[in-house]
Image (cartoon, rainbow, N blue to C red):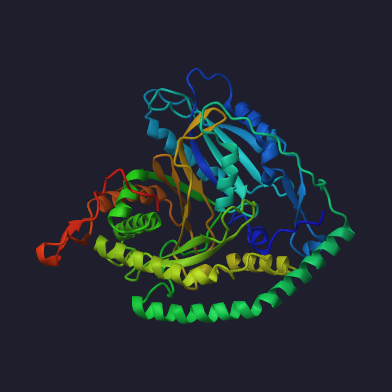
Length: 512
């Protein structure tokens, strides 16, 4: 079996990682245990993962480094020690009598803020699960536990993580049977020196040949897209092609994190999107823009220029379930300089449409792999120097915040027999982008996970609360009216009447 090196994009998450920039993603889950549950949930979860391990290859591999870190490492097989990978934490003291169910969420957020800076052990498979005990009981009087997952971004991207979750979670309290799928390939637990060098050189040659073969088509696509982008920029005014204004979020980050979460009703958000002729992603950007505008305005830190969001876009083809990274980044203006929410939403819709038009042709040529000999040294040195020299504090940034929207299950789900009540993603902050808002649709909610540098945004929970206010503002925004042809009158002459598009709370709204 040929050696499987990490792609250039996957490996870059390893080279950019420092104690100040952990490169793992994951989620905060708040679970409700079934009535009468006894024992330690961590043991239930270990048994559950052991039963599903055969169907989760991303959890059964570790890194094998090239000599002298000359090129990208490769994946080799590994047998995870579930006692190490799935660990239990108990909050100090007993849940106070009369504690509210929502207190569990705040306690869980604080624990994740403390756990997130811990780097994953690179000598083991790049994932870990933390079970948090000692939370108040739910509103239904049932015992609750928290689960915080960590998976290195070198191993999965957002959509690959969703595919992994589809194997681990169930639709009923009774876990389903997973049919074993034995692999016919020969397992590789280590790679010899000769095989490493031969594989690295072979991969290098194939990458150069591929790039040379694709160069003419790539240059043509870039030229056509550039011409289209310029015309779009003229049409939309400033558009998205602009440097971002300075904000408290655009600084060199430290090693401490602050995490907060929020949820809004998914059905109502879909109905509002349909009423305003927008996509669900437009509405997510609108909520983030409204919350950021309010948060910064209250602190007299709102720039006169619009904030810019870095928005990941998936390059993954339909049906591709490989657990590697296939994504790129686009830029979208958030319209935070506009006080009128209707104008702000129109601005976001136009900016989002311009991005989709510009990126449509480019998606096919954006690289996720490239030659890697010498790259590890260069990227690690550059990442270290960028942080130590505090370059992010001195140079303008292309974006102010990362906003990522990942589709998730819109039905109730269970993990090892426990009902998942909250599913908020956790993600990465980097130098210059001290706030990451990752959003996932789940059950009847749209769940927001806000990960921030603790020094830059110590009160990130206030920003999460501002999302609720932004949703309330969106609910009061009048829906536009559209011209609808009326039935023809006598003589064949038709007329036009104005009518509201749809009710903002109607049950027939469609997804995205």
